[in-house]
Length: 419
Image (tube, helix red, strand yellow):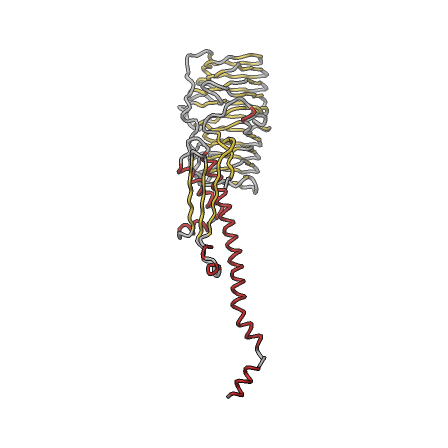
């Protein structure tokens, strides 16, 4: 027996296998910790991106007039879900994903904290604090920014619709659609839409790859009409009856134009500053006529009042600096029939400084040339915006270069991360 023990102790056969067997658990542990670590870094990176984007989105919403805590929270949560994908919905149902949003309106700060429960194979034995994985972001606003398109339609038609090679470029500003249906935003037939932020209460359809930039945020809370409390101008007695100007050079003054104002042929009409009330009739510019005016605003009063600018015309307008229509180019009567069509077909309507407010109407743009691209800023608050037949609507947000004010509720601050 002693001889057998001595032989076994002195034997070197199978030593590699024994050493491998003894070292394998250590190797597996090291590899496992490394895999866990990289997985943890990956998850934390995803959570941080989601938190950053949600904080930015939340503070953008906070900067808009009338935004409630519930709206801000809904927007921020939507960004978390969008960035984390379907996994986030499953995890939150299981209680594995937590989202905490804090809103400090007085400081204009939105904080988003996300934590995700995670069960690593090995790292929990090295450091028990690795789970849950946490990410936090804070954002605030500096300077100012503009909401340049707001489609108020909640059902039909879509709040924003582009087709037939139309283009909408919202430079430095945001596009919103309140339509809660899957077709809240429609971009078809080689049309394109670009903005800083695109927010849709329902869903969107874009048939061409890259037609919409950035990817729209869906399921956004409804954006209340920011001009709903703005009083309409008072309509007094008629100063003019069914005025028609044909092949004339004429200067007009503010007043009540009952039965409409029609400018035809090669007329050249200049508008003196003030408020022009178009009552129960068309505001129509046709042929090769031009209508120009600085610090002018139109109140489209009555159920029959529409505006039409045909393709050969020249339209050059800036909104009033003060008074009942300060910052507003066109103001539609809130008692008008819904879904009436107002048309901008002019191929020379490149300077439209101010806000077009059609709370019940459809703004239809079908020019074959750029529209509003020479304007310091143009904002659209309409029931529905529809672009067709190749127009390029360019909405700038350079409100600092003009003395035309932006109406309350359309302007906010530029969102930045501070933590």
